[in-house]
Amino acid sequence: MKNIKTYSILIIASLSWLGCSNFDDLNTNPNTSATIDPEIMLTTIEFLPGANWQDQTRYFYYPGGFMNQWTGLWGMVEYGGNAQKSAPEMSRLWLKYYPDVINKTITLIDATKDDPALVNINSMARIIKVQCFLRLTDYYGDIPYFDAGKGYLEDKLITQYDRQEDIYNDFFKELDEASKALDASKPLAKYDAIYDSNINEWKKYANSLRLRIAMRLVKVNPAKAKQEAETAVAAGVFTSNEDICAVTYEDFRNPSTGIGKGNGVANLIYGSSADRGSEFWLTTEIVEVMEAMNDPRLLNGYYATIQLRDENRTDVTDLVLNERGGPYAASTMQAQRYAWDPNSKYPGGPVTINYNGEEVAIEYRYSLLRASKYIQAFDAPFINIGYAEVEFLLAEAAFRGWNVPGSAAEHYKNGLEASVRQWRIFGAEVNESDVTAFSNANPLTPGQELMDINTQLWVLHILDPMEAWSNYRRSGMPEVTFHNYVPSLNQSNGQMPRRMEYPSQEAELNTSSYEEAVSRIGEDDWLKRVWWDVEQ
Image 1 (cartoon, rainbow, N blue to C red):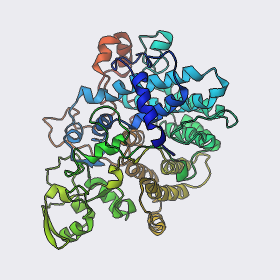
Image 2: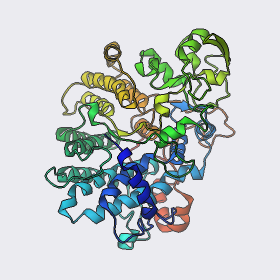
Image 3: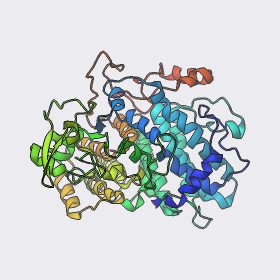
Image 4: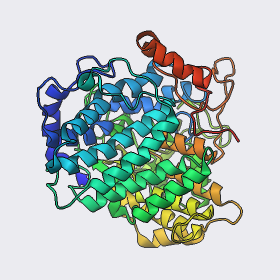
């Protein structure tokens, strides 16, 4: 992981001539100059996925509203528990990724494919392409893939929707070829914002991403899942938190629209003003799981704290907990509830604490656990995939009897420890005694191995609701309740949505391709399942 501060000015400047003029067309010319600078373009496609505050808002509403990690915001409840369909919200990933990240990535791959001196940049771009398309296809299902981004390059203005199975098969091919093509003896990228052109780390990243993708197939094609996972592990996946694939942004408050130099997730979670505080509350459901395990990420305030509504967002967690009494969960908001709703499981009210010799009254909702200052920091890392996830996936592979080194129990223990140590890259002071006490007290439970593993992946992906949702759909775990508090409003019949619906523009502008894709799933509806999400 490399800090992006050195390159952010170059990226922002480059976007003025790398930008698209029509963001509704997935085949828009990705550059208005006759040439591109591959060095800057690489940094740009690394930077963009985590840079836009408004993009992250949409991803935390859909599917963050489904996954019962955070709640409180109007959108997370309306589009989550109340299951209100919003075409603009569901379309956001498509309408941002295709004309922006995808077009730039495909252009970079095309511009570097025939130049041996640029083989490393080309290979890195191919890996990033898989990372970005994985999000798109897991979100929607069948999507334009093989011809996407080629409107300018090859005059392919109408693109077909490729089958997700074919897309996944190409993911494995791309990661295999790109990883093998990486060559430390060839010129290195000057501005690689992830690994500073450490070729070995890029290979580990490709293989770890391949492992994640392989595990998606456990229901639809377990033999293929086994084969691809074993191949990825044999080639070399992450082995420590030093391998985490992440980009670190600047300590910068982004504009309310468009990209900025700060972390888009942090800018979203920070809230609208300094003294109002974050509007993301940790849910009762996730806190109960963490508290039962004495999870340091909860007890030490890495995930959430109770904060005063001052500019410093002063941590008063201990004072409120002592005053209120009861467990941490008694200071939480139930999933898929609004900030002003009462907690029916842990009834409570406002709290008055003695702070610096003064009596301070705290309104009920602000006396509950909200996103920590680690998460709100504008220069927080944006993690694409980490070591802890790899260890949990290895634990599942080992439990399934696949040919991977180590036992399920060993990998699970490693995953628990890595998931806590990971917070050091956010600036937390992690005590090793807390780490070992946590893992020693929570061994893998015989007979509940898959539930334990996938529950921890749910807890781990606290800042990546899209991945949490994908892992839930492929595993069915943990037992996330999709609430139906207001049946008269609910547009999913109280069921968990399984995909996002295509943008309405596709039916109008890419009609034949859209209709063919819809015919394969029966209906463009969010209760239809993507290819690998087999009902069992």
